[in-house]
Amino acid sequence: DSGGFQMVSLLKLAEITEEGVTFENPFLDRGEEIGICERDGQEQAYPDETVKNNKKRSAGQSLSAPTINNNTSQYDYTDKNNEQLQQSDHQYPKTKSQRMLLRPEDSIYHQNNIGSDIIMALDDVVSSTADDRIRFEIATYRTLRWLDRCHAAHRRPHDQNLFPIVQGGLDTSPGGLRDICLAGFRLRDEKAPGYAIGGLAGGESKDDFWRVVHHCCCALPDTKPRYLMGVGYPLDLVVCTALGVDMYDCVYPTRTARFGVALVDGETP
Image (cartoon, one colour):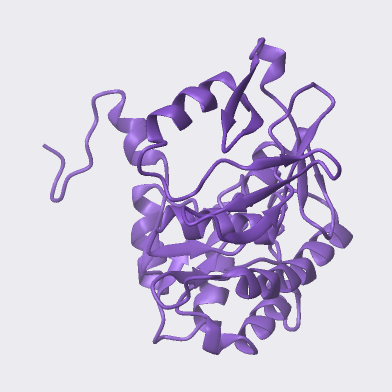
């Protein structure tokens, strides 16, 4: 995932602007200390656990640690050949007052390095139960602008599939916010190997949920996979597959497994 969901789950710690989303550091309140390690002759600051993990991975990792630019408070990321790839504003906090910025470019940069087959554009996500039409409208248009920035930052388009994420709240009216987002995606269709439907499964009614899924599936091309994010329960899988969804992700199977329950084919044992 791109990190967009954290705009909802960590909303109280986040400030969303056109540049990206800035998160307050949630870690130091738990007494986490900052470690200092040295690489390539420069000191670098990390939370303690990050220092340990970096030491374990240092032998074979392709992404070197970010070097601190004391003048700009930015970090320069370089690959294993020491060739500069991109600058990122990601900041590992040293004090409670420091914050971390996640831009569309940063999200794609890290997903490119993780190397997953399908990566997600950073979208502006608003809780489906929010009562703020203006905020939904801002998020819909911003999602389209951020998608363009994600495409520009995507370094591995030939072996990683970048999916846009349809936003627009629960508005499925003709010419409404979902339609606006879908129309923007159609203009960029040649760059999209598949599509995701986002902004749902956040507490809205089932009728509203299924209505939005149906609306999006009818508008998205049949020749490309449709991925419904954050779904779902068994009933949701059956209904949404009938509506045209191909792919899902949800915590439900693993969360349920913690209590000794497995999902299997066929009738209930």
